[in-house]
Length: 249
Image (cartoon, rainbow, N blue to C red; front, side):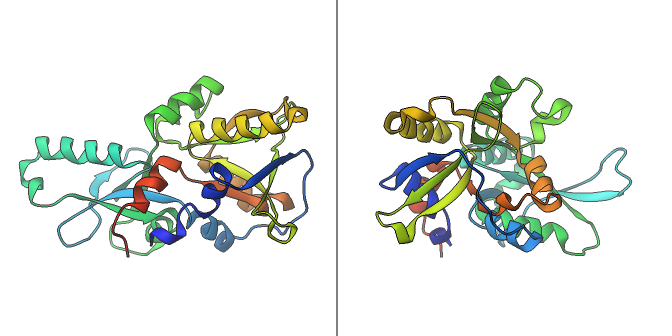
């Protein structure tokens, strides 16, 4: 499992060559399956019980018209889910018999939520606190009143707010790829921006903007912008480094 995570991110933060490109390349439009393929590279953390099933809580949310739903909390870093498990164990001592941290990819949890079941599954995304604060620092209106449940993505933008593509290659023209990077970590976005500006002074006007995962996903599925096919979701490098050390099959 761990082999699918972070393949591109390692190139951006490691030895890959990077240049910023201030034009919009042409590419194919996205389908839902293509979006899920991109999500498959994003690891998330959930709470699992002793049998390996996902731990949910059944509630009747107000004003959603759905009746009872099973909430599956989806975390984007391990410390947050560990803290959640410890809090639940203190409030419900019987939970000590189970409740471990599980790793799954973002595509899989979306597919789980689409399955038909007696009690519908509803995903609750828990963004990393520091990245949520960084998103609000960039845009005080980020997420409006619901920003606590929205996952921020950080992207390189030009002075007009257009996404800036990165040309990444492994040392040969044949392996070069032009991408629009969507970082789950503000620190990773800062590091990449510093790297390209140090070697490409002409892109000094490039900065970092923020968009929510929900809004961008909706745009990818509804917009005719062909450049969206080149968007890549890049997980937090610290999460990737942690997963590399786990014994995952």
